[in-house]
Image (cartoon, rainbow, N blue to C red; front, side, top):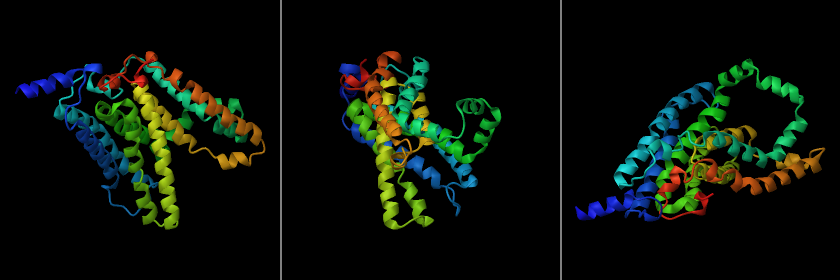
Length: 317
């Protein structure tokens, strides 16, 4: 009984006094793995010979994914109860659902991501047949948004996938990983679950014979690498801001933009301007990365940082 009380006292402390209980990392990793398998597995509970972009398949997957995502906070609650880890912030606050610092959390991470995509945005603006005012009119046209929300693929790529994936793979997994791995290591561990989860696309490519075996394998490796790097970026944003909304908006924006078309930029009629924009975007992104995610804008320390066993520079302004 005395030993149990000792562990409880240790795990209730935050900051410098937090001591991870024995076996915490194994429990955390297994919990994250189970959560990732549940998310991906929910996509395949429906038997169908239709491709993934068919509206019927998308609607069915919406149902199962939303159910798993809605239940995902229970994984964090069960992990917390099983390990005995106790902190001051509520479960929802640990998962980035809070009001403090919400406005900067909506604006600054998205603006930072747009700076990174300065090159593709410049390229898009040069190639777009619309004028700036045409774009403004379309953006405020309710019929345009009605068409978007009636398009199942748009709804999946811009709303459901960013919201559910960030909830499951960032908001739920990072609070379980930070106590044993620390914020810095958790940023690079969490995306591995996210990257591996995207390997399920290989199943459909093989199933519908969409390419050669070597081509599908290379595509899977590229997608894993890209999603892992992106996952590390949104994990960084989540830990620095302590908000779920920033990663969701950045995810939606990146889904819209896609991977930068560098080969097209090299052949662009105004390639000097476009390539300069690419370079400028990367430089500005690196300059603004820490200032735009300064925890002082969002409340110091951010809730997930209170789970760290020792102070981390990522959690300091």
